[in-house]
Every structure is written in C-alpha cells, then in structure tokens.
Amino acid sequence: MYTGIIALGLGYLLSQFYRAFLAVLTPVLQADLGATAEDLATASGMWFLAFACMQIPLGWALDRVGPRLTSGVMVIVGAAGAAIFAMATTPMAIKIAMALIGVGCAPVLMANYYIFARMLPAAAFGTLAGVTIGVGSLGNIAASLPLTAAVDAFGWRQTVGVMAALTLATGVAVLALVRDPPRVTDTAGGSLMDLLRMPALWPVFAMMAACYGPSAGLRGLWLGPWQADVFGATAVQIGTVSLVMGLAMVAGNFAYGPLDRVFGTRKWLVFGGNALVALAFIALWAWPATAGLPMLALVAAIGLFGAAFPMVMAHGRAFLPPHLMGRGVTLINLFGIGAAGLMQVATGRLHAAIPPDPATRPYEAVFLLYAAVVVAGLAVYLWSQDRTD
Image (cartoon, rainbow, N blue to C red; front, side):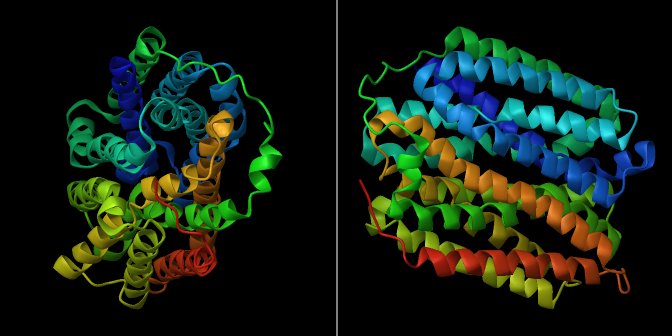
C-alpha cells in the first residue's frame, strides 16, 4: 500500500508543479509565442476547469473501478498534455495542453485521500491530508527558482519535455504499485444526489470554493505579471518571490494538519486562517505597490494561512458514508478546483478590462475580488456544523 501512496504522492507533486509553473514561464511564453496575460490566465483556467470537470466521473471511478487503473491512465493523459506544451507554437496550443495536463493531475490527490479514508483511522485523516499536500507542495517550490534556473540553462521546451517524461514514468509507476482497497458492497443511498441533499456539506462546499482559488491564483498566475508590471522584476526576482510564497504554503499545509486535534475544532481553525487571508488581500489591494519585506510578508501570509484545503476536506470527509467516499471527496474537491478555474478566467478578463494607468490598477481589482470571494465564503461557513473524528 505504501509504495502506491508514494507513487500517487509523486503524481501530486507534479500536479502542484503544473498548476504553478505558468507564473515563472510568463516572460518566455510572451516573448516566444506572443502569449498575453489574458491568454495565460485562460490557459491556467483551462487546467483548473478540466481538473474540475473530471471530479464527478473520477468519484464514480474510485468507488467502482478503484484508484490504481483510474489514476494511472489519467496521469498518462497528462504526460501527453505536457508533451504538447513542450512543442507548442501558439497560445491556443498552450491552452489545449493545459487542459490535458489538468485531466492528468485530477486523480492523484483524491486517490490518496480515498485510500486514507478507506484504509486508515479516521482521526488521522486531517494530518495525513495535510502531510500529503505539504510534501506535494515541493512541486510548487520546483516551479519557482529551480524552474527559472532550468529554463535559463536548457530552455523552456527542453525543461517541459523532461517534465512530460517524468509524468509518463509516474503514470506507469501508479499502474504498477497502487493497490486498490477492498470494494464496499453496500450501495444503499449510493447516488451523488444523496450527497447534495446533506445540509451539513453545503457550508463546507462554500468554504472550499472560497479558500483555495485566491491563494492558488496569486501563486500560480498573478504573482509573475504583478511583480513584472508593478516592480519591474526580473525572472530571477519573480522566482524568488514565488519561492517565498511556495515555502509558506508548504509550512501551512504541515501546520494545519494536526491542529484540529490540538484545538478540538476544524470549523474555527479554517475560519480564523481564512479571515487572515482576506485581511492580507485587502492590504495588497490598498497598497499594491508596496515592495520589499512588507510585500513578501503579505504574500507569505496568504500562502501560509491560505493552506486550509486539507482541513476543509477533513471537515467534509467527516460527514461522508463509506460507500460514497470516492464521490464525496471528489465532489468537495470539485467546488475548490472548479471555483479556482472560474476565478482564473474571471480575473484574466478583469485584468484585461482595466486600463493599466497606473500599472497597479488591474491588480488592485484582482486583489479586491479575491478578498471579496474569501469574505463571502466565510459568511456562509459560519453556518457550518463543526465536526472532528
């Protein structure tokens, strides 16, 4: 079982890399392919939307087919997308490639969560969920300064080509090493509608939709253009700021994991962390041209406190019956990833619609939208039922 979990963990590390690497590749894609900020926002949104669209069939497949075959085949599809990215000559090819990569990345975290939920003690789910994302977030780190160095040394096409080969190898490893949990034979109440009819899940859905997209959008998309347009940052400087936020996200995922058992609550842990995220985005909206340590502190705060995804997942998982575990965790994930994809596209259009006079104006609008989304999610989440295992 554990070698399979490691293989899926490597797949999740690649997933974190692919959702964040466009921020660092922005300058070379603009120069070589003529890609605009809106093109890249749409491409990033395609990754998230393709990822989200796979969650419903993925949940059914985890429950009925099992994580081994489901994940292995989909990861290989992602490898094909990365190969198309490496050979792209137009922004449209980048968008298609990102959609295929999104399909390939869709199963790996949920497959691990499914195995945790089915095979390991319920009380450990939050900690294991956080550790998985924390380790996987090394992919987020790889998509910062290390990616910048690789692109400088070898070129972006060669670098992405190597990532395509590594993704293919990971898909093969998943097929070889993952072991499916025993099937659950009780299928009573086994439809997705049964999950949607559970009132306790809806505030969790709202919080998942609000907690992930803003931090993922800043790290994976807007950090690079904001640093370049407002501060005149070089690729290395963008990589440095990305590294700071990435490290903060890793720390946040490890920190959130065991804290539900320390404080005896999931609801208020998630609420407090995301309230701080909203405040940090409001500060960026008010002072978008603030440079140096204050800017790094705000970016790091969003990365650290915005890493509540595994705790929100653990909160929702506590309400799920065993025979709907696969569909349940993927449905919760759908709200997070789907909302993130919509926010990528929406912020891209918002950014394009606002004249950059001064250069901070489009980013002020993006930061304010992110703050509003988090505040709206918090307002609904207030009505949630707290539950720990």
